[in-house]
Length: 380
Image 1 (cartoon, one colour):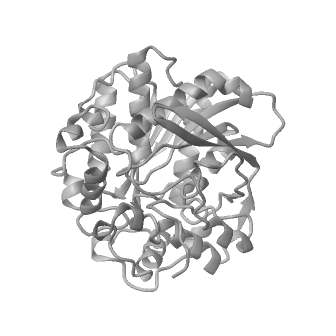
Image 2 (cartoon, one colour):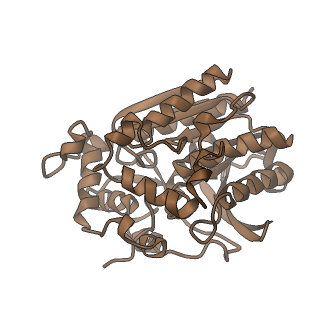
Image 3 (cartoon, rainbow, N blue to C red):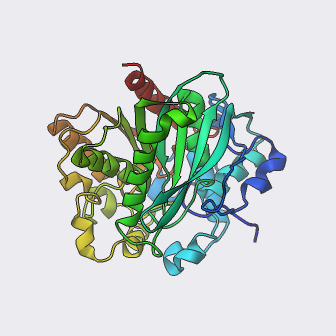
């Protein structure tokens, strides 16, 4: 079997050339690196995905999938990988992911991407009990100072890494013209709750104190996260509020994990969907939480947390996703708490669609929404 990206992410923007695809699949250690030189391409924001059509009928669980989304799911299924829930975390990290599916669709359909206009460097920072790695994306536009986005990748706090979600981080750097700090927080089951949350806060605190050293504006720092990373971003905002640290100017939560309730409408409808289903979410929780009691902690169950005083928020949701209901509830609760919130559901999409701007028009639209809202916050 070919070597694949670990995890549940979409590296849909690809590498700068097709020859670089195999290099992108190297699962290098992020924690040991001191310099990053990963070259990622930014999607050409055209509806190139409109020409994609699935070979077979759409799955019974996803009859309303867009054609390009169905093509990616079809490719993912073609790998015939074992269910992640049947594996250890270590083995799950080695399995083919939606990232591989997206990369293969890009290659097989000759979808055009353009080179990134951001440089990447690596930085290790100390945290309680060890250190974590940051990958820093800096636009090559020659400015003396840029706003900053601290970005948290997905993977259920268990799988995936900076490479897996590199496309999203790179797209944000290019489109928002911001420095993006992508955080390699420590993962479960090797590191249980709340290690990933504390690591994520430490990375934000480092950004606040050291932004100027990387050409960042310390007064213009926002948070963005996908899936488990969306949960981490919101939790970091709450921790900053409670600890008296400077608040982020904005947060973008992309299909965030926001509750510990498997009886919501979207959970009940998600037993068979891909790439994320109810069983896999339970598996993630079993790996990260010390006990079910942790699931009620406000840093996990955002929908039950005190949300007052948090930064203005954009929540991006997918139709086929066990997390859809809790994302909507989080949006409602943020608004009740007086937090300006922009919620957008993208029909026909699945969990992990956000990074797929080279394939999905909806992903390009979601990225544009996130960037528009971030820029408005940066320019206040």
